[in-house]
Image (cartoon, rainbow, N blue to C red; front, side, top):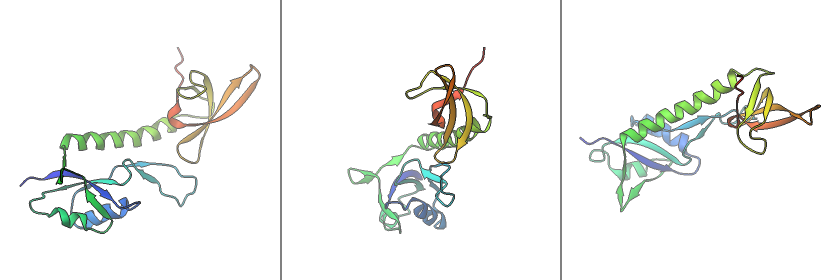
Length: 170
């Protein structure tokens, strides 16, 4: 019995639906998603890490590949030379860990910052500047910071949360 992970392509915007289809059929599925904070509270709270793709664990000697491809919401198994290509187990483990790290890091990084904390801008036009953390802006992991500009004035900037780090005081 050779059970391997395979990548399967879904129809456009049907990843969630297809993942539920596989779960209902008792097929192990890995659907890597990242948590987001949308502006509209009724919007999706997750976005796919690989839009249009999921990973399933099956034995193709028992489950026919065409059965998987004809499942509602499914497009095709990722194949090379007409043969479905297995995804190594260690790669799936690395992806699972990476997605978990990203989801926990973005929450942790923002949750320990308070209004008035000193931060360092890591990327963008203002990379290297120190600023003051103001607040988390609703939306796609954005923050508002206050940048001291021309000695007297604080300029408000909105940045992606990944563009800042806590300033190291030493």
